[in-house]
Length: 245
Length: 245
DNA sequence: GCCCATTTGTGCGTATGTATG
DNA sequence: ACATACATACGCACAAATGGG
Image 1 (cartoon, helix red, strand yellow):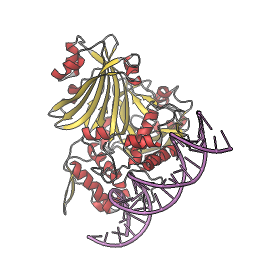
Image 2 (spheres, each protein chain N blue to C red):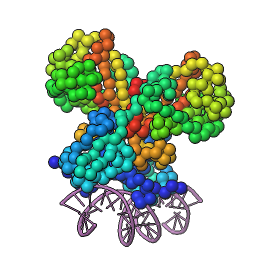
Image 3 (tube, helix red, strand yellow):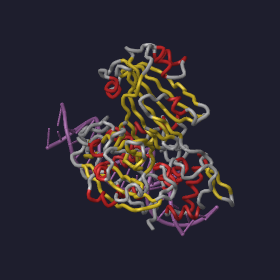
Image 4 (spheres, chains in turn red, orange, green, blue):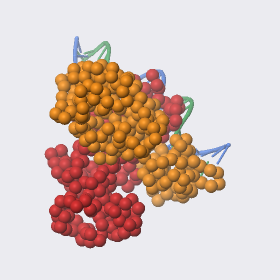
């Protein structure tokens, strides 16, 4: 019906047709509609379904094959070669490693660095500080079975936890660090979720194809008295992860 | 430094540089870094910042101007011409209209249609039915101040609420329909959030630029006894909306 | 082995889009 | 506005591999 061509494409999307097809097919796979080992529809049928040329479909399938999502065999077809998306639970008492337990056999958190900086307007607002107040910033990448699944940045009030950066090196989890600093318990006070394209740094760190979509979760953790102790900004590849409330 | 060109672009992203620039600038605006009336950086400076040619930056600014996000004045610069993103609250007791009250002056829900169908595997699983059971499907688009902000599809068990479709025509809200059918209260039992590109139909209905990113929220509402009564799939343009947990 | 339909792989020509200078 | 280079998308044709009679 509506033939989507580079030329007829009404508003000139700036997103190639082959990429939209690749995204749609990948969605069926990570969303569970197609399971590992399943045979995809033929190139002709996909071309028909998306109103595109077979070459364009092939370009999309090549991209998915390069990602390791599918495998193509001449004369036989294309087959699903990867698993469902991981679910990251979001709740008042969520802890990173607990949430993903059972979904991956090996979870690892890599610390990219810590540094002392002056709170930007948004960080200050989230932590209830004046703009420019000293905060400790922590940059991490998390991996499940060796694959990067999140890029997180956290800010902690320096005045309240001057040792935060030093302690983090020796500990595996944020929970453990806070426990060592006298905060026995904390809860998620608020979470905002949005989505956007990955920038260059995120593309590199998360080993994504350029133009990949990220789910962005932005939240504040507070202690039992409701005092904000940590502001976090996490970015998840939308292809690999979904958030469960 | 890292010059991003169509040619040097490592793996051929399928997303044009002008679109990535437009997305990044729009993000600063809807994310609150730039407020209505603020002046954007000059074209030369933006070109420098993104490592692109000034022509390419101009292409991005043209796209944003066409969307109504910015306004460009010869000899003066470009200025922010739109407001912050709307926040859609997600909680156990969230109602659509209550959640957005105060953020827009006029909210409207448009019914695209209702129909009786056989539950697909995913719908059946969510509602606790056998695959193929009869369900009523309801398709809607919601608008805030005339702008489409969500595309939702809901499924209700036909056996439990045979009059659902008929009643919806006369009522404004799902809450009112359920109230008329004897369900005085219901809560959100589970929610899964993901992100992806819009397809052709969504692009048309939500009046988006092709290739736009959607936040997808998938959830089950249950009555006070925990019995699933409605399965909903909502899609929000990530440029306009964020979800707050 | 051979034929055949199906499916993927490849080559060529053309038009338009993207990005630079 | 112009010139250049490459990417994207299409259409047609044919080659190569697979699997079933």
